[in-house]
Length: 245
Image 1: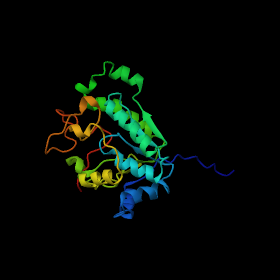
Image 2: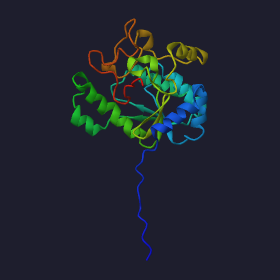
Image 3: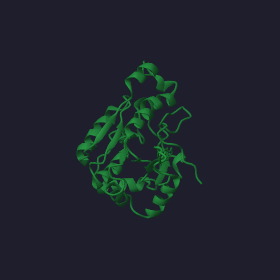
C-alpha cells in the first residue's frame, strides 16, 4: 500500500522582509499615484485595503486610492471617541471621492463593557485604551487582507523619519506611499485637486485622533505633538516606531 500523503498547513508568512525590499527597489522613484494604480489594479487587487483615520492629511492618500480603483476597501476604525468633525469629514470625503467600500469597524461591545465600562480608560491607561478601541478592531478589519495601505509620512515625527515605502508586519505587506512626502507636497496636492480640508486643521489640530487624546499643536512642534500630550506615548499601537538603519 502506498504511503498516505500527509496534509500540511502552510504557516509561513504571506510576505517577508525580502519581498518588501524587492517592492522598494521595484518602485524606487515611481510617483505614489502611479505605484498605487499599478498595484491596486494589478497583483494586489482583491488582497489589499487602505486604512484611514480621515484626519488632516487623509484626503491625499484617499484621492490617490479612489483615482486608481474606487472599489478598493477602506477601513475606518471608529473608536467611539472621535471628534464629530472627523465623522462629518469622513462622510464628505466618501461622497466627494466616490469611495465605494468604506468599512467602519468599532470596538467590541463586550470588551468595552469589561475593560472600559465608564469610558475613561484613556485618562489613566492610554495604551490599554488604544488596544481596546483601535488595535483590536483594526485587526478584525484587516483580517481578510494580505496587504494594507497606511497614510504615514516620515516628516510627522521623529519616530517616523526612516519610514520605508514598503514593510512587512506579521506577514502582511504594508504600504506607506507617502513616506517621503513633506508638508509642501501635501499642500500642493490639496491645491491641485481642490480637496477639502479637515475642519479642525485651521484650529491648530495638525494630527487628529480621538477627541480626549488630541490637542492643538504649538509652533515649532512635530505635527503629532498634540497626540497623547502628557504621556510617554507616540503611537497608538497600530504602527511601530521606525528605527534608522
